[in-house]
Figure 1 (cartoon, rainbow, N blue to C red):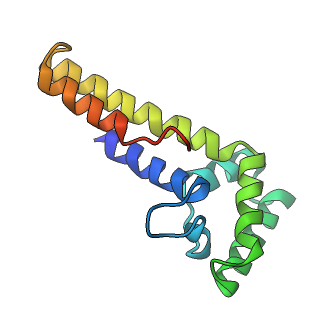
Figure 2: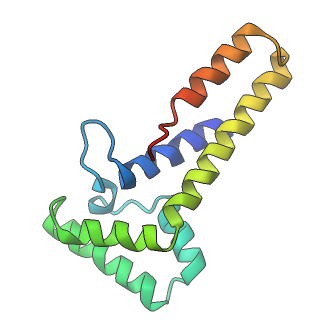
Length: 129
């Protein structure tokens, strides 16, 4: 079940790194989505910190100005600088790997179908994010 959460986290990381196919990089910021990278940032800096207020300001500006707002790249830079995107990626990959291990437990580690499913899941995580 957590494997789905892992893939959602990876989707959020892709949105902030390379951008999802058919979407522009950072459109989650314009839409005001508080994904795991944002939550990790808030957790590390504190909701009332100057850094978090700066990030919130970027979200507000991006919502007003749209995807081409310089606030989108500024927000991504803030999240990257705090290592929040990398931490989220690590968590997403970890959840996917745990899901793969569950398949091995259920079907047996040498089961060809379990191995195919594991390979499929792992191939769905881009190396360049």
